[in-house]
Image (cartoon, rainbow, N blue to C red):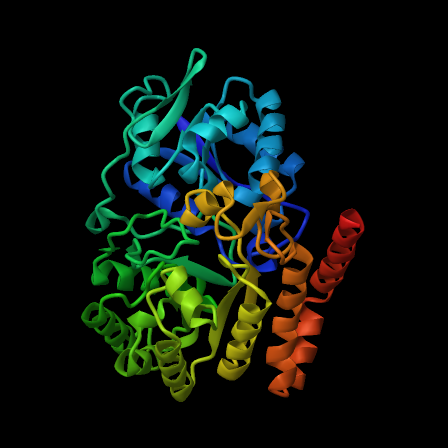
Length: 457
């Protein structure tokens, strides 16, 4: 029987972060892994249960028809417990199959995830493409020489050396034909982030590696021809980090016959944008740009090593608005030594910037970040109030609070942030849209908020 692997993206009935739990795009991590293994003629199957809204019983039936040698799971920290529970059920049905865990949580805690969840045989950290390729070449048997994995050997957990970063010149064009049709499609032009923000884990390292522009354009053409999506989402950690390369790519998109009416959106750092780049983004079809603003307090921006000032943020937002590109502003509440005054400064800053799509998150000390180490030590005025991984999410989490500043207060500021941006800027139509779009989420948040209050009292 040939060696094969099935890559599984977990589906949850519970909605905590709607854009993530109910996506309208195929999972970019699975797409990259699948395409890379296909390039080496390895038998790989994909079950994007999250995109298909596929319950576990149907996932099991599909696995029965595929009969893979191994199953690869991916998990963020807040979902590792539910993914492990699902893996236990799958393990009972397929006892001889190797179960591999990857994703953000395993990347940060490759040994701990194996010691904590015995259902997994192997964890993958770093970039998973080369590790999975080595595992398949070795038929999932001799693990001692496979880079970027941890695995069980007798009663011990062995952690191998990390692999060298993947050469982006060799990375294949993503193949989405095995995925269900989607509203929009992800695409990456680079990997890596040089910034030192203390709340981010930088899973692809600090050195930016770029795909060849020709490869990026060809992938865009294929997506446009095959699927004609509503949008393409450029999935870079730091899009436009190299100005000249960015201008070359954007101008090529603008003048390409196939791509001339392509719509796309991205996320980036404020330091990557200037007037010329923003104008080129608009001309090439950009319909939304997301920017991490984080805080309206200058000292806080320095404390979290954002690498940007309020003045710089204001200027970049002005350029974006002049170009007529809707922008999404990401704000964080609960940063180190945060207090009521600094939260109000952040909300006031958000009101003045008036992003088309404001997003207020509560800080989560994710494993693999400097913030995680601070919280574990009780520094930064942090106090851990839950050791459940499921509480590690920005919307309805319950991980930590600050001394003299309860979690409930942070959640009230979170709600006040959304209300302030919309009401103080007299955006009544947006308020109606927001209520209609997130009505069920708002009810869940209210129930969650008062339930927490009951537990506290």
